[in-house]
Image 1: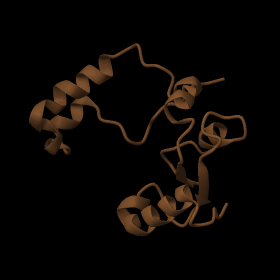
Image 2: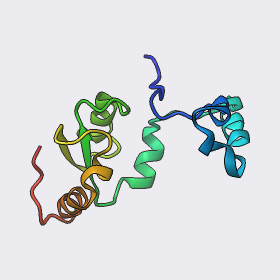
Image 3: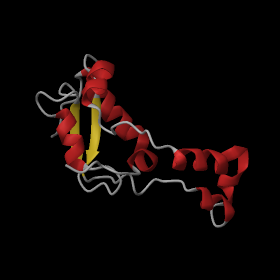
Image 4: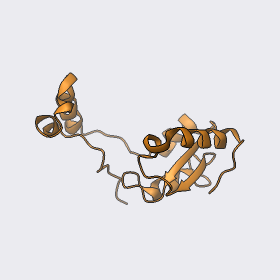
Length: 124
């Protein structure tokens, strides 16, 4: 099984030198370099740690089926029956893309909060 790797929302040290000059302030270039040099990253989806951290909380999540930055199958794996976040109420949608909170954050937040509290039905 191959690990899930990020590819869309990355910061590289060279970005502070050109078109992404806004990243050059406040030590961002050195931070990006330190992150690039780090070799001991843990598992992206560590099920044991997720269950310990979130296993008994009320939660809900919007999962975008065609999200180009977040692997749909990995999301479904952690919220399935027996998964570390099996109690999480999931709204599977393509009404929004990865930028959903920026595009319509208030409505999405109200829906997810209602799902977590049980006052809004889970649509998926």
